Amino acid sequence: MREAVSLIYIVTKATIDKAYTRCNMNKPIERLKSVRQRIEKACIAAGRQPGEVSLLAVSKRHTSDNIIIFNGLGLVSFGENQLQEALQKQGELNKLDLQWHFIGTIQSNKTHAIAEHFQWVQSVDRQKILKRLSAQRPDHLAPLNICLQVNIDQEPQKAGANPEEILQLAELAHGLNNIKLRGLMAIPRMTTVPTQQHDSFNKVKALFEKLKNAGHDIDTLSMGMSSDLEVAIAEGSTMVRIGTDLLGKRDT
Ligand SMILES: *Cc1c(COP(=O)(O)O)cnc(C)c1O
Image (cartoon, rainbow, N blue to C red; front, side, top):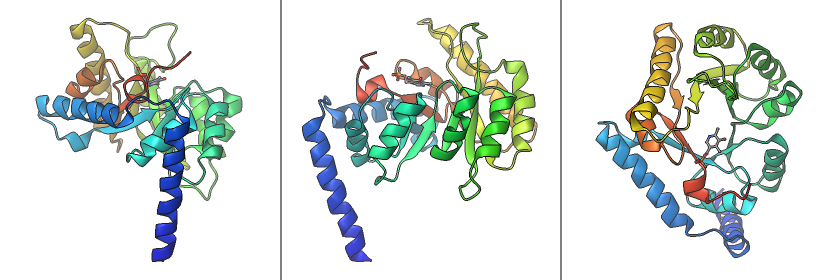
């Protein structure tokens, strides 16, 4: 048993070293430290415990080597928004014990693969997708963790259910066998006006509380990205999704 453990360690260490030589990642340790400090500061300012907010590394359009490096630094949860890209990385990284979150637009012909290859889906915004994910989740796997995506500012071009549809979606989720409703995900309107940012996040939090009051056993309020994680945490976020400030700029 001890041998097996140390063997895994050696493989992992070598894998990490190789990843460092191949990638052009700029100061991953410093980036992670800085993001963690921002989360901690925001929690303290809000009178919350830093342990209340988890960190999802958004690895879309970053290489598998970058994921290896951040996994070596202790991160296990990674977010992807394109199925094909995610499946390729999952294949390359199948020796690592990672938790994959799907955070992109879901076409109904992709639900089968998503239900099979992810632990979380944070971008569910309609009944049809919810039903298909539950029906297509393999029975030997734990229920799929779901966040309902809410289009909190009701922007026409943006994915997400309307706020008034959320309660009904949650009821449906509750009755489905192979999914576990965990909470809400939102991407508020782009703005640099702090009061508007607070307003949007606060509306998501209120909806989250409404679901809880309706009896839903949920624990995840996924909101906050590189540019607004502080505001999101001030308004009650329990999971921030960070791409740029962790892994660097994306090309496209
Ligand atoms: C890309 C993306 C993020 C990360 O955004 P950054 O600004 O790079 O931190 C978070 N959530 C979703 C849904 C995304 O698509």
